[in-house]
Length: 322
Image 1 (cartoon, rainbow, N blue to C red):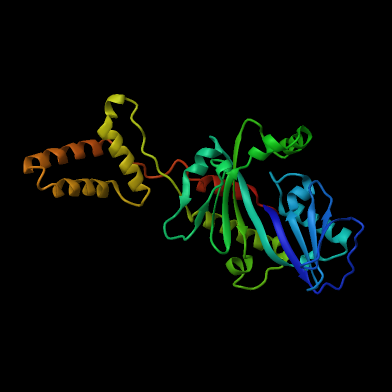
Image 2: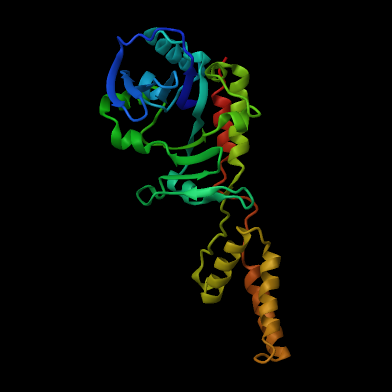
């Protein structure tokens, strides 16, 4: 679903209707005037007098319905048509500067577990960001064109919405007792990553073919992230002595660095072989047998329990709009 948008129209020949606009401020240095359109939440209109541009900026679902738990293409069209009517400006012809597209997924355990167990894949050149106060609640990764966001989708509903608004969101499908996580792409330069460098018009986001393209990209962009794999901890403490703990931790780190358990064992063997002045041949052989025994107890995973690909695909399929 579409959330935040920033779209700019240049050389507008229409006369803007200020009846539904509330003046917020003037920036005399940059010759800009800021207005708000009152809705469930405010939408911003920025008039850049010196360059003859008008910008629409804000969260469309929050403006139109007061939440972003659900929001389909039909409602997006209704929201923009409403803004066009009350402002007398055809924003469908505006160029998209930035926008967000994502889905909310129901997960079986707290979103924190998923968030802290994701990182960027090696080679993807994504910078990981996480504010201290949001640790375990919101993490994002970015490059020059996109920001990939993973966050607790129920947190703001529980802590910031009043009871009337909560009931509206319950009617839209939110269950107080369930856990929800959102994966979202913030396209900082959509023309570069989606349209071969050509400007994207706002009407593209109302096009079913573009919606399909965005869903495909959502799945593709998620695969730039890596969900950590975890080795199961033995249930019997007799099988989890200090050497086992070292082996467990080292191997778990290694497999998340794209090393195989065999490579880990090879590294341990190499350390033993290098102890030429400390260990005799029989000492080395004994330690290698111990390493083999301990490594053999580790149940290395083939998949990550934090992988959201299936959840993401299911959520994408549910958002199909006629």
